[in-house]
Image (cartoon, rainbow over all chains, first blue to last red):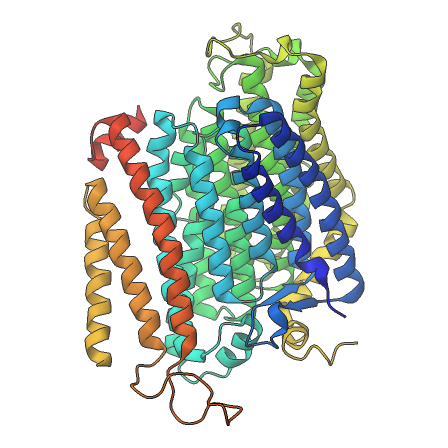
Length: 508
Length: 116
């Protein structure tokens, strides 16, 4: 049986992107197509997710070339879950953009680029070929370049220089690593590589290649000391773009880490140690960076992205079952919460006309219901039990105790604690403090309170939707832990993955 | 031959990284282009250089025999060239735009303004 559902999320966004380019300039048509496609993508992602739950690991060989000669698409629990979460974030961002992004941006292909970005993300999650992964990464970065610079504001362009340079550099390093890997093993299929690299005699060269992959993915996922491009770029574009970047772009780097460092390279003690040290420093520098930012709320949450990447890298570095469960669960939680917190910052901007903490205030008095909604996400980000951020941290702490990495425990605590402090301060500044009035923005800027109620709902509904997803993850943690355990078993025992790709007939 | 190409790859990487570390935006882009070309040559090199036959199966046979050139690196390089062409042209347009907005191509000055 051929599992076409694997390719459907990719095809959907490709077709939508092309349609949107055909509807160039017609904003309302674009809005409708984009929103419809976002909704359909959620259904397709559910379809894929249930298909994987039912059939186990499913594969699709492009052009019917048997692996390892063609490009394989593979859907396992991890990738199908990430496709599902991508569709959630994507839908929320599209709906939020309908009202929040200005018309000039839409006229120059904003929605098309969102869909090409989602196309690249889905492709990266579903491919089983390392060079194809590189190509999807390029699709992602070229779309993100356009989204970052569209509008051409001065600060956007300045942030874009770091972003473009570092991502191009990461691509070159990734390509170099792939070249050496091809030279070592003579194949590009990840399942095939897994077998050939495991039995390769030249361990030194294999480890060197692993370090090259580490640097490439490290730049993508913004770990210490390769993260500085992120805080200088993520706060410059509109909040909706910030949301999709903050929620998904660094996470695709984490996905690549999880995939490549479980399937192709198994971290040896040196690499594990390196990952743990990098995780500690990422937690520390991200948290300190956020502390040092006094005023700009979006810059603060950009630094928090870096800080929280540390949790996932820590889980990968310890490489025990519990640690990986923590990392995978954190990944699930982080995609939803980071997207939502950026959308919330956009909402605050729409209400008050600024995201400067000094000028904000009094939101709790004027918008109590919205404040409560935002509070759930903020508490979840901090990790207040029983919300979603709490459970993965529990696993990570437990794992760091059992492996004896007490220094890492300390850094995990510091990272969590500083996040708590920062969010508490933001809460006081934004919601409790006596506020100034609204800030003047541009001439045609429409404040949230002056919008018609339909537009208000369009802005609030994505935040409600993602908050509900967060609540589901947090309150139904039992189920999510089972899913994470299942994923980790697939990561640790790679034989079913290899069999599913290489010998599809053995499967029932 | 391998040695010459290997040295060339190393030279391209070295000069690419040197140029990236300069302060000028134009040199930055040139550095990235050189690095990209170095990576492409590296892929070519690891596919093993030989001067035997092309990888075309003769009419009478059903598989390739003897030494033949590996077609995969060529396909990879072609893909990588196309991708890097797109990315580089975007990057060049971006720095043009940055230059028009900021009025300088010195990264230190741009960075200082960004901090303000």
